[in-house]
Length: 99
Image (tube, rainbow, N blue to C red):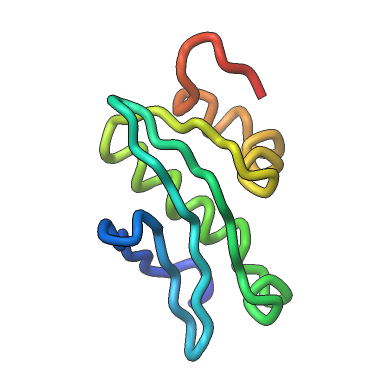
């Protein structure tokens, strides 16, 4: 099912990855203290058209929530997702940061 995706945290490359068939989407990150900066979003057009953008970002945010750290979105795609879902994920933003 499209909702049940499994992401991988490639710590060596500092990116979350989603593999679907021969396609790979990635969100690059940088860790600083108790914050994760989501710096770059890449998704093949194929996966984008199939609706995987929000599913992938949601999976990454759920993983961040499990780790108990804050999100600093710097990628336009991540900021857009946060704006659209601010009620669900506003607790992930550091104090004083509004999107």
